[in-house]
Image (cartoon, rainbow, N blue to C red):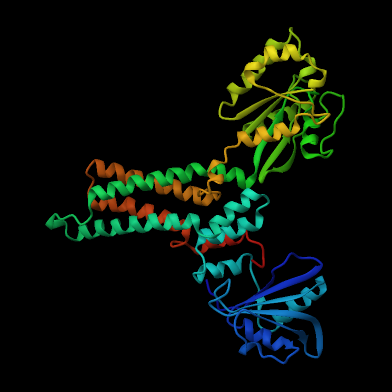
Amino acid sequence: MTNKDTIIALATASGAGAIAVLRVSGPKAISVSNTLFKSIHDKNLLNQPTHTVHLGHIVDGDRVLDEVLVSIYKNPQSYTGEDVVEISCHGSSYIQQQILQLFIRNGCRSANPGEFTLRAFLNGKMDLSQAEAVADLIASDSAAAHQIAMQQMRGGFSSEIKKLREELLNFASLIELELDFSEEDVEFADRRQFEDLLQRIVKVLKYLIDSFSTGNVIKNGVPISIIGAPNVGKSTLLNALLNEDKAIVSNIAGTTRDAIEDELIIEGIKFRFIDTAGIRQTDDTVESIGIKKTFAKMAESQVIIQLIDASLISKANTADILASLVETKAQYPEKETLVVLNKMDLADKALLSKVFSELEPLHMSAKTGTGVELLKTKLLDMVHMGKLQNNDTIITNARHYDALRLALKNIQKVQVGMQTGLSGDLLAIDIREALYHFGRITGEISTDDLLGNIFANFCIGK
């Protein structure tokens, strides 16, 4: 990969707005800008210090395109580590395109997705995990996702990995050195210290790997299925949670035939609520497909809200209802389940408190909104975010998770080898593999294909 080209792209969102920012980076960024920019004070951009802003006009020959502010960032004190110019112009789509095309005609080329951040990585301004955190930060749509992305962009995760990799690399070097003196039967690496290091690495890796379930939830939202028989109030509950008429509500059983999803952020955590088709025996082909989807969504969810129409509960049917609740829990033992008794304003409260007390159900009326806020609080309590509250390192990236998992596998092989007296040359193979997977995370070891896949998911201009 080469940084010889000078690239340009729109750094702000496309479309009309108050202002727009175009970013130019590369060896000719300042010189090309100087040719096309006329300062109101006749300044030469080539002679201006870094981190300065200048007022003037972008001109195409004798034609003035716009009055702009030009910001200069000279290498290496810039985002990309190269000379960077940022042009703040008026937000007309026409003006943006005119300036963009003018710079392309004068020696720049359009930037590829993520190319500015790629250059920052290649120029040592950030490691690979920090670069990926930039994309996560842009995509963050909740306080929790923002917090994790900021922590990773500042190097919280990568610094931990780098430290472990450096310590392991030091021991690996000593073991490799022993191979050169195998005939003398000498040991340069203290085996006791090495075993302690391996135990510490395993502990950290297991913690990081376990944190991925939390990180993935924070990044993508907590999936919650609202299940129950037809007409128990699932769609009404969804509408009450979202405070809008998202799902159709009617007295006709089986109104909801497909899964309806929407998102809600509660105290910085994103929840994805799924209103499912009512579960019952039916000969309706379309409704049957919807019920199959209900079970599929339950399997994908982290939390299952089991909604029951409290107004229909009687002494005659309590045993059947309790049996269905137990069956659902048995089917999905790893899921958090919450029993919610709806339509409590129409229910026999004395009977319910006697029959369902052990299940600790939540009482509510989705129609009137009673109990909705309590449900939100309960959901927050059920989602374990202790790591987030403690500012611990949390993994959100599937690529990192995969690399950590493979690194742990190799470290555990080294531990077994140490216990069985495996020779140094065989230990070195697994150590090198573990180092390789550590390096994949931070970018010490990378390929053009890997970088291409990562940065292709970035927006253009970043």
